[in-house]
Length: 120
Image 1 (spheres, rainbow, N blue to C red):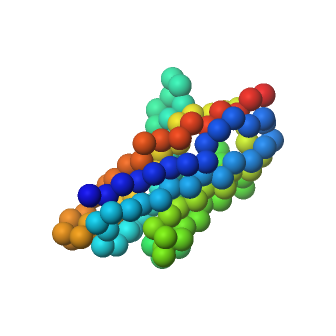
Image 2: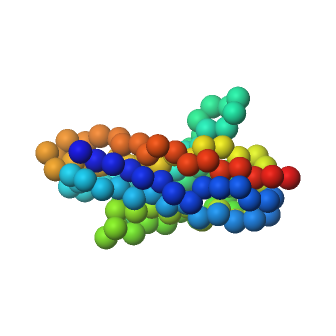
């Protein structure tokens, strides 16, 4: 069994910062990509940022220069530092880990989501 647990969401004023964390635990053999998505009311799910096991990163155009994704491979944890937050960043942020479990089965695992609300 594999679990992903997100934390760090909350309510912040526009221009503020938040740091999200997502820790993977359980029967993990190796983690490939770790990705943050967000779901805003009335909108489709959006890929926010992703990082591979090799350290390469990719961002949505809407967050480039404001958000930074990083990971601690020893802790199986990915972070999302969000600066200069805007009201349009509001949504539920989900973490996804593409990983091989202890049976060497490759699968995508999702966290439960954490709410981020940015007030104007």
